[in-house]
Amino acid sequence: MPGSHPRWPLLLLLLLGVGFENFWLWGEDWLLFGIPVNLAYHVGLCVVGAGLLAAVVRWGWPDDADD
Image 1 (tube, rainbow, N blue to C red):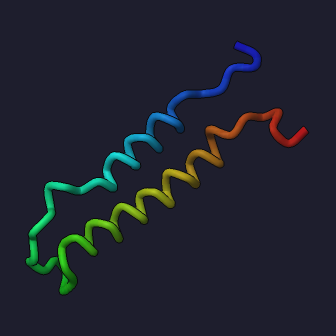
Image 2 (cartoon, rainbow, N blue to C red):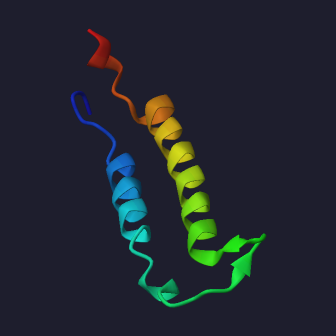
Image 3 (cartoon, rainbow, N blue to C red):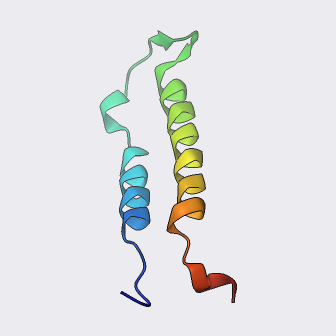
């Protein structure tokens, strides 16, 4: 369909935003790889977010945006 944009980037970015609200780890103080579990969770989430944004730029960017 001309002029339509894929919806998967927005859906995945919204899902990633919901993932940042990690209420299930509140009050946890155990270590994972030598760092607090909440910090390890957010490090992993940032790596996933960077990969997701790279995928959006690579495959989700509209072809006519540079014109």
